[in-house]
Image (cartoon, rainbow, N blue to C red):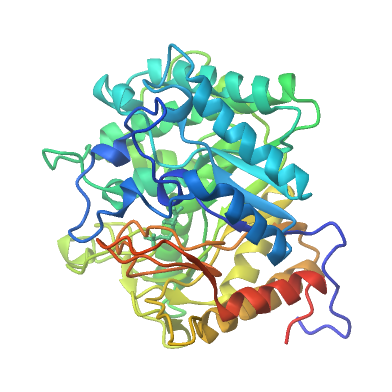
Length: 470
Ligand code: BGP
């Protein structure tokens, strides 16, 4: 669609930036924090960085000052469940509450809107040892944790995100590390876990509405569009299969409280459907999110399944690289899009399309909580990083956000991943995303100094002008 007039970004647009607790904070075992699954997982060699990460735990004041200088209107971060409840449930660790209270106060002092993710991959290890999300007791633990957060922070935080990328945890359980012993859950177990997470999410959203009349809460899903490899109708079916199973099925449950029919039949046919107890669907439905948060990095291109094992590519995949599934779809290439050096498709137009589809389907405001480019940024002799590729990436995506706004999609904010360098789950500090460089190597902590990248100055100017892009 061509327009004569492109709509400006709304005045109240939440220009933001993202991080998550385990990827930025460090201080993994201090001040009463308990271990999370992340702390106890096996991670790829050379990515030992989670213990200190970007040392935000000790440097949050300096960091937030830099976020204010950048002009952020919003900061999306996560609370480490294990700082609040070291064992996932039971006794509250006051020092953990104090830490996040300090962060929220600091943000509020600068007029930066806190956007809080309640759970970003880092399930308390004690809960994991007791069955993790297989165990319904984890649902109650999450609700208790939610109640505590709303009680302490409900008056100071308006935007809440329940669970980060539930679909990544279910579809790529190895993406956040592999449990010691190396055994990942079966699909049957994973879809039961998924069901329990949905109940937990529904109950917490309902609780948020009860306890925080001014609060807004929503799920945060890794969402994208699947293109069909050719105009062959069977390719279109395969693309629809995977787009539904990978993305819409999660949001249909979160928003409408029902299992998408195609998804449910896929589960039943493979005998991996969850056990649904009385009251479960009502609990899921009771959530009624106020908005949808989406993490968008790439699109994927999909071809017809051949119905045998050759559907699955032997390549290594991750949360963005689709590998195919027997009898469902095959991964295909798209010659019309670029790729990062890690093989993630770069497709700004795909963001516009994904936003349009999500808004059309749910008619809820959309907050973009992740989008960005990972790169092995290099510090120059002049102590800066010439990350023009990041400027290009963000600019191209923001232009598509503006077109989506012009299409009528209600996008309320943009929080690129990440506002400051954090540990990448797969590539440690060899792959960076931030506007602010953290001076550390993989093993050598150096001085952890903060250095503004070229993209910092560019993004600052975008925010200052409410979206004017050079
Ligand atoms: C998303 C996660 C983030 C972050 C990002 C980049 O899926 O929600 O936590 O890790 O991907 O991924 P990576 O660090 O693997 O490059």
